[in-house]
Image (cartoon, rainbow, N blue to C red; front, side):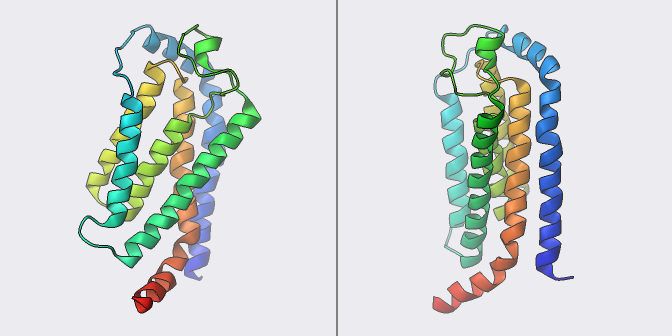
Length: 206
């Protein structure tokens, strides 16, 4: 069996996981709603722009990891580009799902909060969670280093903040996390057979 076929089969498994678990998260809406109310009623003080700062930090970390800290390497850059394509794909799928499902925000459906996102900005899945976990997965793909797990902690914090600030149900964040991880890995696996030939081509040019 060729490497490309093996990669395609592995990608198919990740896509199947997403196909099962992302819609499955919607089945948790009842429990998720109760948990949402419990969390929001705690009235946890969240510093302004903290979510955006963490997100920018994650994206910056992805860029630094792709750069390699010391010097550019063709293989690392190519892997980063493939992971980046996966991240973008996950985000686009997240937007498509929102348009299809049109789930109302909990800050209108369950509670009335002043800073609730605009009407028509649907809730499931969480775009922030999708992007955060996709970027964290991209960092893990590039480095395969245990320190990359810190990126997942940042992604988890971003998801938690989206709930604490009232913008999302917990199952929105769960669905986004699964989508971000699975799609990023699947796209990378589909593209990974191109890594070696592309690396050779760019190295030869250099």
